[in-house]
Length: 196
Image (cartoon, rainbow, N blue to C red; front, side, top):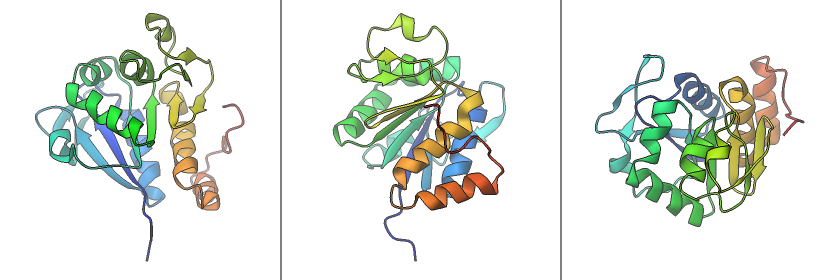
């Protein structure tokens, strides 16, 4: 019987980058990390960046009061605009930041959601090219994945696996061998990630 199962919320809004979201969800679930895919829209059926039909498990409003071990957001230009404009998303993130939970932002979500709302509070992070220049919060680092305290950020779609395994490495701090085994099992050759 599994004990102390970690629980992650994935926040999706119309226009999200589906590859980034699905790779993350897949790796979490392979590692027995419970994932709630939460729609930040009015319906669980979402429109993704490249029009792949994907449905969320729940609406964010229905799970708003739940506490998670980590909150993840993928990129996607319109998707991150929609996340950033959603007051519930920002309040949900703030509550998890205050609770010292992991905040995991891939691609443009690091800049357009976290930095845009001054949630990084000067921490180092990474994001898609030139996006960091638009915001004064946070210190941009041009690396695949950046970890600064509870914040884990990744550059974009091409580092989705590195990003997901890094999040898993921190969530499963007492079982790194499980994370390493799974990376090897799927023939992912870029783990452990030395170029953080």
